[in-house]
Image 1 (cartoon, rainbow, N blue to C red):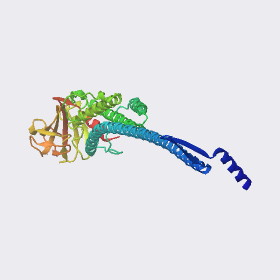
Image 2: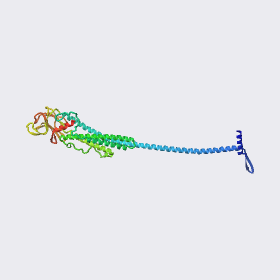
Image 3: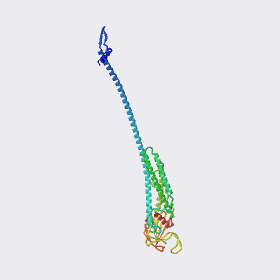
Length: 434
């Protein structure tokens, strides 16, 4: 160790030899003697100073780099945050726009469904009212029974098929409705876009559209079938329907009515198809309602609701008093004395009194050109101008006038022309038998 330190002293001694620094001032020479130790001390001080300067310079440079790096990182973070905020705002705007589209689509769909529902509700209620009226008529007619007093054996339903038709019209209507419904489903799926909510809503709306179309087809079919049956019923009595029913000026009188024309086709092909079907169904219900209204004043019942016996028909017969052939413009029913004679439809008493050959007679004006006559009564129970309903009592059976025994002579006149009353009673039987 001493050897190494001795060697170090020798090296330092050679490097830092004793030196004199001469200085001349005013002709006088001065010198400063610097020993090895002094030089070493100065070298250490200078070296330390240089190291401090180097450290300080490096530290300043590094600090500046750190500040620059931090500033860069801060700008990167700010840029990233701004981008994320922008993306979030754009996503929020997209969601808001989608919600607005869904709300608008929902409102439009709900409005369309509500309009169709209201139309269907009105149509169904109107059809139900007509059915209730036909049921009431059927029940009333069933009280009198057929021409000879026969009662219905299997219920009081609205109609029987007086002329059975082919099932094709109903099948074609229902098939067409299903096809239109399937088409609407496909179109709704195509319009759904990327939103599952819109797709689901359109799918549900399309399914409801299909159900509504099927209901329309069913309504149209039932109304058409009943209208055809009632038309055949009236024609079977000898009265063409067109003479009783005035065709509607417009094809849909379901809603009351006025205002500017706004084409529903603007709602799209599906709306146009729906309302086209609704218009046809409403037209069928309108026609059925018109026939039903006319039917209320058609005399389809027997003038007697008690047990009776058919004694004389309509047309040419041998006169019961003189035996000669003559024309008989009505039909005769025999029944117990003073049996109640009743009105065969709603109407107003046109005449109540005595007429030659008829004895005590009542005539009822039912409107639409129909008048019924009830003759040979024992007593009259109504007076002229009095309103009567189906099966209201108008008098009591007797044998007044030109008669051979207690009976009622019953006539049906249409626009002054006598028609066979038996055909009307038979037609009435179709209403309550099925």
